[in-house]
Image (cartoon, rainbow, N blue to C red; front, side, top):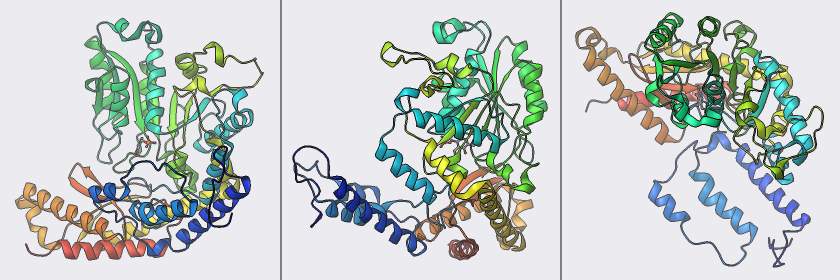
Length: 499
Ligand code: PLP
C-alpha cells in the first residue's frame, strides 16, 4: 500500500497485505489514544445538531482512501464519543474493555464466526461451553447448568422470564399464546430497586408492567422477603398467578444485594421461579472479603451475570444460566429444516437457548481475558476497585459538606453534597432541604460532566437525589480517584455560589 489506496480492484476485498497495513494504522491510533487517554476529555461532545451536521451527507459513490476514512474517524468521531475506557469514566457501571478482550473482538470479527448451531462454528460453540463453565464457577453457580452467551442482561432477564412463564402449570404459552392465560393475571415480583429491564420483559412477554409487583426494600435498599411472602399470598388469595421472582445482586442505583437465600425460601414455599439479576454484582464475590457478602446465587432457577460490566470484556457479553435442565431450550428451540444438523454427542446448538439465530463469537474475548489475567489477576483488579471506592467514601465521610447516603460493599459510591449552611433546614424545612440539595447536586453533576475531566451519573434515593460514582475501570488508579474528588469539590464550590 503506497498512498493509502485500498480498493484498486472493482471486485473483491482489499488484499491481505493492505488489510495488515491498515490494521497497523488502526492499532497505532489506538496505542496513541491509550497512551494519552488521561489528557483527553472523557466526554465533551458537540451539541447533537452540530454533530449530526458534521457527519451528514450521502454515501460516497466512489471508493475513499482508508487514510482519509481513518483521519475523519479520528477528527469527527473519536472526540465526540463518551470514552467508557477513560480512567475517569465513573458513570452508570463503569465497564471497560481490556486489551486482550479488544484483540479477541478483532480476531472473532475477522473470522466472522456464526455460532448459531454447532456445525456453523464448532470451536466457537465448544469454547462457549468451556467459558460458560468457567464463568459459572466464578459466579458460584452450578457449572453444569444450561447456559448461553447473549448480548445483555436485559434480554437475559426476558429469556429467563419466558422460561419461567413456560414453567407455569397448565399454560403452554409457547403453543397457545397468551390467549390461554384466561383469568388470573401472571405476576412477577421484584424489589422497588430492581432494574427497568424487568418491566421491559413484562411488556415483551405480555405480562404487563401492572403485573410487576414492586416489593419494598429495607433501609439498605434490599428486597424484604417478609413483604414478598405477603404479596405472593395476597395474590394467590385474589386468584392471580405468581410466575417468578427477580432478585437483584447489585442494584443499579446503590449496589444493594438482595437476600437471595431468604427469597429462595419464599419461592420454594410457593413453587415459584427465582431469577437472579447479578448483571453487576455477581463477580464481586471473587474479592475474598466480599465472598460471604455477595449472596449465594446457586439456588436461583436462572441467573444473568455480565462479563461486560465487571470482567473487562468489551460490549456485549452476558452469561444467562438456567439450572432447570432444558428449560431454555424447551422455550426457544425451533429447528427449521435448513438448520437441521447431524447429531453430534456433546454438541450444543446455542441458537436453541435464546431468540437469537445468527450469533457472534462472544466466547473468545472472555477466554482470552480470563487466560490473560488469570482468576487471581481478575480478583486482584476487582479488589483494587473496591479499595479505591473505600478511599473515596472515606474522603466524603470526613468532609462535613458531603454525605454518603447509601451503603454498598461494592465499588459503587453514592455521594451527596449537603453543605453545612444547609443543615439547619434539614429539620425545619425537610422538603425545601431536599429540593435545594437536589438542585445543588444536579448542578454539580452538570458542571462535572461538562468539564470533560470526569464522567458521572446520578440516581434517586429514598431521601433524594444522589451522585453515583462507579469504580471498576481496569485503567483507574489512585491518582484518578484523587482527581475525581478534586473535580467534585471544585464543582461543588462553583455550584454553591449565591444566586
Ligand atoms: N440489571 C442491572 C442491575 C443493571 O444495572 C443493568 C444495567 O445497568 C441491567 C440489568 C441491564 O444490563 P444490560 O445493559 O446488559 O442489558
